[in-house]
Image (tube, rainbow, N blue to C red; front, side, top):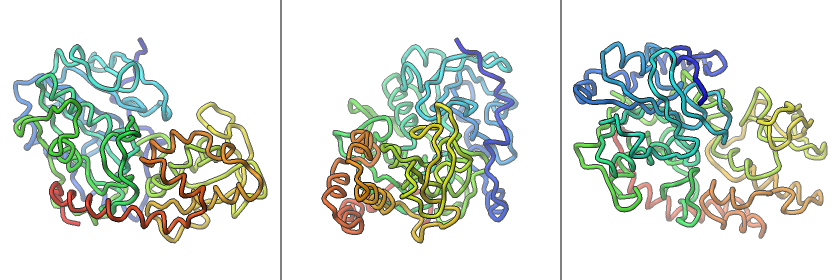
Length: 398
């Protein structure tokens, strides 16, 4: 069993997002975790499990674990998502169970042998408090962890508290709706790639639309959401702590929905550099647009580990449209095909792409040479229906 380092040492400068022009906006937003007076009475007399990571901080910078202990809440168990409690694990890397040496609390991994709490995991828990920063993208796995936590709570008679946080990608929605045959941990709910919801709004939608497995749901009194006061989806929000190791800047969070699709290909999006999800590259100088870069010779720097690659930097030339689009994916696909690369040499994991984008149809349409604008327009009827559904669960103005 791996012993985790102290939770009190979670903050590290490599996980702090810096953006001076947004600092006043960020510091003025008190997140759900700051509303102690609203949720502490709900926890009184209960055994509490915390589903947390490095982003689980009050506006003062105090971690939720420390705040709970200071308030003498009976915290019995800590649950760790993808990347771990301290954010040290890379994408896809298993997180192990352990003991927090500072508090002596057991740490149960939700990204290892199992991703859903078992009845045994919850034997010393009455209520689960979920507090993690999402980025508004369906394939960002924290919302899948939330859905499975809710499902386990509904199955085993536990309660759930969702401490809400702003969505840094705002209110826009984009991308195809997840098709049932492609459901996986990187996409569980029938929502678009970019969903325009906060985690609390999404939790209410998941529960209200009966999207938990086996027909279970949380009764109204068993699902409590703590809102961000005076928040609007149009408010800018610079994340004070990086939500995961490869989303290090506000810009990477913005580009993540579009560039995340490249993770099903042989094309690098900057893993193994200091600008992940802000660059695109491949080891062929014919593909250079405005940038070339070296990728670290490290196992986490897939898919072009140790290679020198050529491509483009969104720092040098940001796209005109910063919202989700398949424009770059389609453009790179055909640039490589025109150079003689075979389909399988570009999209080497088509099943993974289907899980990320939610359908096989998009890749088929790209292969057929359809313009990306036409492909994106085909999603609109479903997006209109989702937009209407979103209104039912929206807690904040747009």
